[in-house]
Image (cartoon, rainbow, N blue to C red; front, side, top):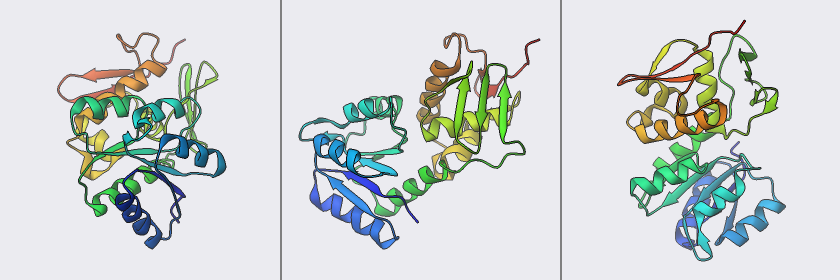
Length: 230
């Protein structure tokens, strides 16, 4: 069963179309037409997914992402008419899990929703836990720790880090990471991968500009380097 979805969209026709589609799949929705309405609904309901328009009457939807992310890891899919790369990268950098441009196909949107939901499911792992020196990750509880302090990770950030840690010291191609973390339809979305690698480096690396864990393999992909310290 699909989680309760909060649709933050001031265009009633779009909100109703999305709502009807989700309802036909057995899901429930709540609709907000502004940031303030969204915050009220978030305080009143258990929300499993947020679909967010950026052009809201009381401000930019990106500000809502920035406001929520310090304490809220609910998946967020941006739905916006803004298609320039800067808007997309900023939205992802501030914590969105995906970005769909208008006009969109409702079938494409639902595919993106399913892809995000799959990231909430722990990857198949031989071990429940992954360790690398000060960094540890629990695949069942979707929690990660650095120097015994909890890391605040969105579902997509967790899924990417989990996949990297499950394949230590191996070169993973750009296409492989995009396919395994985001899904088959994302294999050309290089900006997604670059953005999330940079986010993870800021969260786990002692010096993000000279990464120890997540190393770039120029023109190929990335390698999660794990050499246990003595």
